[in-house]
Image (tube, rainbow, N blue to C red; front, side, top):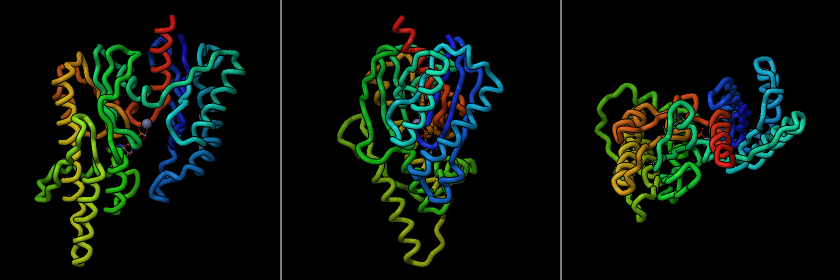
Length: 310
Ligand code: KG4
Ligand code: ZN
């Protein structure tokens, strides 16, 4: 089966061709440079950019692949920015109509989870830690088709906190990759933030860490002292990673999954990937190109769900 996967839920316009389970083409048009000027994604601008980008991405795709071979058109249906999702849906619908092939809606979060199945095999029961700009969840899957969200954030998502802390530190947008880079220096920081407490065993609360960081920066600023940007970013990331790893470890002990995966945009984080791999003998951290939003994960989710329907 040949599947076209289309992702447009946030600020990436991405298409992929999955040929019998293997990624043949992946094209992503990012809007990061445009939104970076504003320090965050502006939904109205994102939808307008998607309108331009779908035309460009289609042009490139047509040069590399004969679209007439496609059997199914999969697209991100929800969740995401409404205007951006609508552009993706209309684009997918137009292609499906012109090829006379079926359309298949995919949940964006399922897409992230199945990004782990692109290069490796997920064995069940499976536990996924989904960390992105909009979500932070621990998902337990008894089978590919069951979804049990055993824990989630009660406030900010991990990626969102990375972005907000980076903005406060004047590092730029998106903050995750910028803070990740600082961490590569691997120096010792004498700054410590406390691990948040949450009622639900597997739930997360991330706004407290963000507040601790912001309060500390304000203290330096009020005293007219230089803000130790790198030390703060480093300590912030250490705390976040420790927290995510601790929670996942707890869930592994109780649920005894046969495999685990780290998915979503924040899974591109180098140190988090290293620590996550140590948690389980069958731990999957997807290739970096499948961590942030992409069309391949949407096509993969569609393939897996269509196998069920057979
Ligand atoms: O999954 P994604 O591309 O979009 C959403 O569905 O939200 O995730 C984007 C998020 C952003 O908050 C970004 O800062 C974060 O993923 N991110 C990272 C890294 N790369 C992207 N966070 C930490 N370390 C990274 N290397
Ligand atoms: Zn995403």
